[in-house]
Image 1 (cartoon, helix red, strand yellow):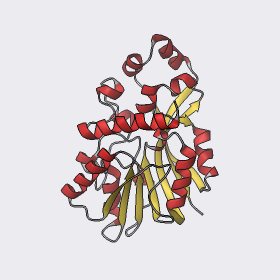
Image 2 (cartoon, one colour):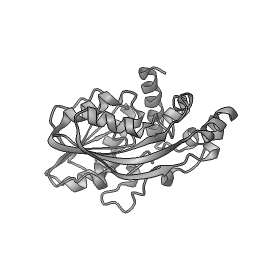
Image 3 (cartoon, rainbow, N blue to C red):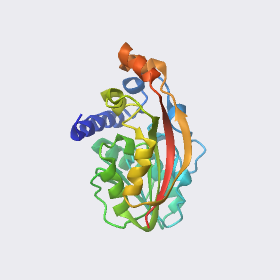
Image 4 (cartoon, rainbow, N blue to C red):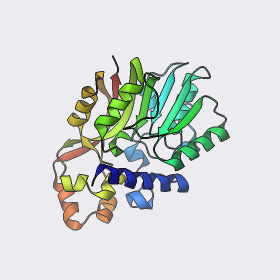
Length: 263
């Protein structure tokens, strides 16, 4: 699929999630399997966690390794209903600001509604794409993102834009899904895999290389865990031949949380 086609497909999927206030792993995405513990990490003990803003779309806890300080300006890329924004806002305090950026109008509206309902005054939400971020240069002390860059077809542009909005000396903490080994191209480009649970993941070495090419330094993986997509979901969305191809291929899906610093 062309990049624009992929983006519109993903946008439609997440607009529906926002309208239904249901996570990625409902029947339309993951065959009815509850993958919240498989894909992501439990938020319920994290300070500032707001359950109503958590749609179960993450694959990590990027705020936990973001070294956010009181007074920081933080940007959450692909902010969804505001889950990580509100956690970061508790850390920055009233002297700081947390800005969420999302490409889906419905998600931005839902996040603003949640912020008003929950009484947050140090948050803002902007409509925009990671590849053409609407925020100004050198704005953020910290950037976080949770399982969103893998949905972006042009990851080079997304990381270049992340570099642009960070202040010199600023850093990011990004949770995402990557591949170790080689997954057949026809499967990674599969529409349901792209907008669902595998979500356009690329090879780990290519992912880290893209970050380095954008200019970041001190790049390191802070957390890493394997992901195994359950059989019911695969059998529902793949043909028998594709299922056999998927299971016999020599690759692993992993959730990673990556740190990088702008010089």
